[in-house]
Length: 108
Image (tube, rainbow, N blue to C red; front, side, top):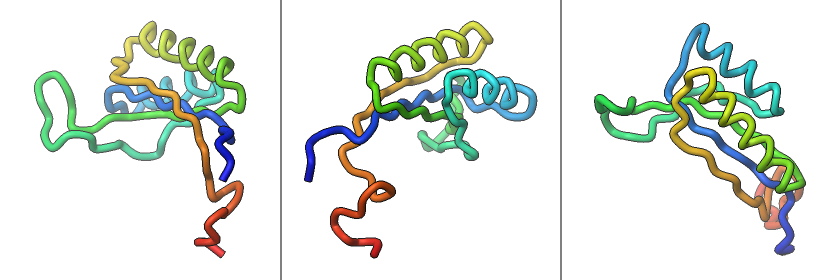
């Protein structure tokens, strides 16, 4: 197994949004080549006054880490400028993805 990253993936988690706000979120994400998840992610057992039990999130990919970092920063800043509450962002290095190669032959 190679120790070289296939690609880098960024995730941005925000407050749960629906309807018109969801469309604004999608529009902003498209500017930076991020895709909005078609579901709300349940991260906590219960709602609190500060946080819903659910989050909305988006994902972006790039083979160049520095480009993905820049796109992530720009998107987070735009989301905040448009009044979205950004809870988290992270960038991961992908070492293995069966979509590219089933190295363990588990899906064949």
